[in-house]
Image 1 (cartoon, rainbow, N blue to C red):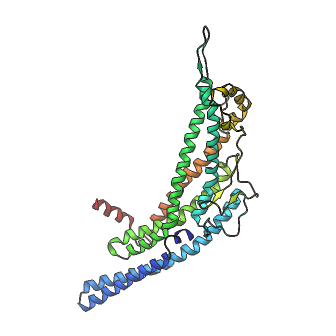
Image 2 (cartoon, rainbow, N blue to C red; image 1 turned 135 degrees about the vertical axis):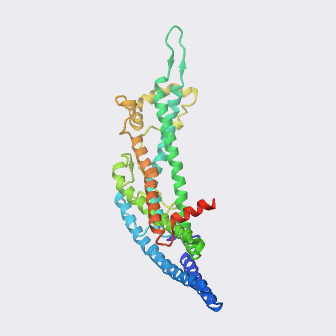
Length: 366
């Protein structure tokens, strides 16, 4: 409940006030219809009073569900994260600003290990690409002999380039998702109040109900679905090189913008390659010995297996991370969004909306 309060304080009061204003407006309409003897308006006013009273009741139910339900779900999600990664958690999760954690904060915490490991892998690929690109670009013509080239390293270079592009795409997708989650964390409950205001008027009643359902779905259903799905799939997709450190304080809760994870990524130790000056002419002749020294580490890390089809091993460290981040960043958010839309379709009628009518009205308007 902390995220939105930094921007909009008292969304509950705003929603209740909007509902009470709709009741007051309906009562005024009934009074004027009786004073001026308009039977048709009296019937309309009575219907609107019923809708306004139901809006007040609905707002009270939403406040109770959001406040009580979120606190309960945050406790469950915290225990699930602790069990999934084997990390003891403090009594109460707080963000960097000292605010109590929301479901969306824990959702971002689930994403952090894979992204942190991906950043380290990108740095490692940069180190490996320096000598690999240099060797692959070698081409020597020898008099009365076959030419000498680094064509055999093209496979390695191509593997590095493909992995780097894939990881950069996933990291970019992660930032997009996190910014969307931050927006939801701060503004979702404000849009509940906006939906209540729209629901108070007959022309916008369906749209208001839809906004209420969508805001609650994105604030509660989406993060909880993501946490449940990730917890169930994590034992099967978590790569061997990723370790959160067990009980040695692998997660820091009070540093950085929100949550940060000190993930232990057991990458191969290739030395301080970036400081060896392999891009200079004087060091070029040392590349061969360096590649020979770390050949097995590089092959295992990149998953280059000459005995398998296409020379790609499915058990490599890099393949495991790509599998994990694909599930975490691409697949599970899609599943969570499908359930959110299902929730919206099921509850918008409960809130007084009719999605088919909204769609037909939008088509007529266009």
